[in-house]
Every structure is written in structure tokens, then in C-alpha cells.
Amino acid sequence: MARVLKGGYNGEGLHIAIVVSRFNSQVTEKLLGGALDGLSSNRVNDEDITVAWVPGSFEIPVVAQTLADSGEFNAIICLGAVVRHETDHYIHVATQTAEGIAAVSIETGVPTIFGVLTTDTELQAIERAGGKEGNRGYDASLAAIETANLMQEIESLNK
Ligand code: INI
Image (tube, rainbow, N blue to C red):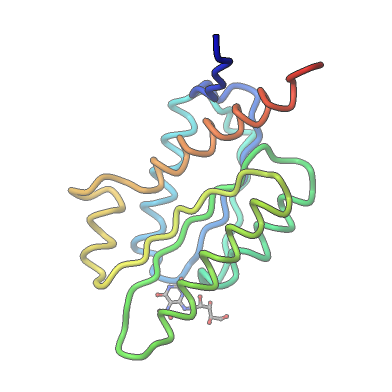
């Protein structure tokens, strides 16, 4: 019979950091609310949650990496909203943020969750931050808990 590993959603005892961008804060504050709601609904203690604000999404990876390197956290949740404008600035910010977050996750081994919206319009972002398309911050919190638990299961194999 195959061994199946499944992280599950019990957040008890997990230490989670959230890095959230102030740019487009009308959206990111809602993503943060969703993430905090998801963590507390799944039994992560308030005192085990750390929130770090950064100026824009581009600054998320370096702060996420420093938090991951601290060894204090089981997962890092990254929240931001990159909205397309007339110039190609958007593309650089979105690409570097996504690649940077993926690199932190792989290089540190600390699950680093991509909760950064990349949308054509502000309305699309609002719809994904507690509007009719749900709340990607909440979704990111579940991904953090599940992946952190899965990593712990893998680390405890053969112990
Ligand atoms: N930062 C965002 O988080 N979202 C955006 O839509 C955005 N746009 O479009 O410019 C944005 N720019 C700021 C960027 O993240 C950095 O903070 C800035 O370039 C300083 O490094």
C-alpha cells in the first residue's frame, strides 16, 4: 500500500509570518484580514503570527527571505496587489515578485506562499480580496498551514 502524506489544516503550534505590501493598501489590507481569519479559524495562535509591512510587492522577497532565514517560522505568507498600468513597470514588479518568492521557498525550504494578486484592473483585485471571487489571502493561509504541516510530516519520516 502506498504511503500518502497530507498536511491537513490543523494550525496549532505553527509559527507563521505574513509579509504584506502597502502599495494598493485598499486591497492588501483585505488580503491580510482574510489571511488572519484563515489562520485563526484553523487554530494558529495570535501570538504565533508575525506581520511585516513592506512598501511594495517588489520588497516582499528580501523580507520573506530574512524571516525564513531566522528559523522562527514554519511558513511565510506573501500578500500584495500588482495592478497593470500604462507602462511595463507592472510586468517587472509582477515577475520579480513571483520569481523572488519562489526562490525564497526553494532556497530556504520554508514554504513561502504566493498570495500576490496580479490583475489587469483594480476591480479584479478587489473582487479577489473579499469580493465575489473570494479572498486570496484566506486561500494563502490554508496553503501555508497545509504545506507547513506536510513539511513537518516529511521531516519526521524515518525518525
Ligand atoms: N507595487 C505593488 O505592490 N503593486 C503595484 O501595482 C505596483 N506598481 O504598479 O507600480 C508596485 N510598485 C512599487 C514596487 O513594488 C516597489 O515598491 C518600488 O518599485 C520600489 O522598489
